Length: 127
Image 1 (cartoon, one colour):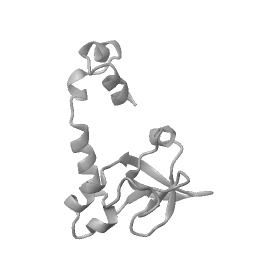
Image 2 (cartoon, rainbow, N blue to C red):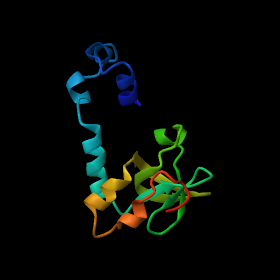
Image 3 (cartoon, one colour):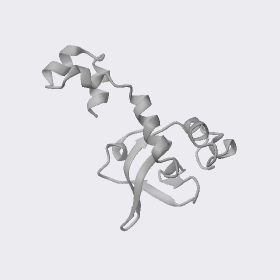
Image 4 (cartoon, rainbow, N blue to C red):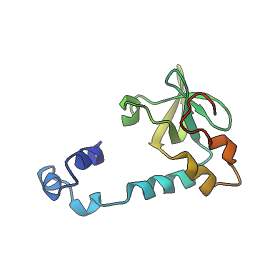
């Protein structure tokens, strides 16, 4: 959320100063960080399905983004996510979730994902 606010204000130094945030700490490469997270959690990936829930790519298990996550309230919901763990309460929930790009999966873990599993990234409902 903080990063998105900073981005919406044009990545300004003054915005950081006004919000008591160190500018140098905000200049990280967010895509590189997400890619690094994906490389560690590549087995824990889910894709958005029709109806708003996600389905884990390998096990085809339905899961929702946990309500405490900022991504649970985002619109549109992220199509591809990596998560740390699944927690079962009244439903299966994904904790510690970040949005990823599906092409990273074949690049990072070609031994685990095949191109056919991530093709058609624009068409929800077929994993």
